[in-house]
Image (cartoon, rainbow, N blue to C red; front, side, top):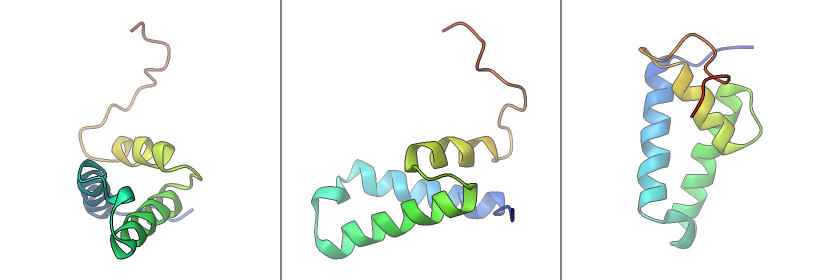
Length: 75
């Protein structure tokens, strides 16, 4: 699988989160379409089929992300 450059992932994450904060999913058709396009691109770039999983996967590929498995750590 091709891996997106961390700078591209960071940009996509920032765009998606900005649109989410602005409630773009409730906005104008064009803005909703842009948000869906970014979500789709994140999914393709991370090999996932869900935008939430894509955001997690993308964040783990950014510089400074934890490299060890933290799934067993207590909350």
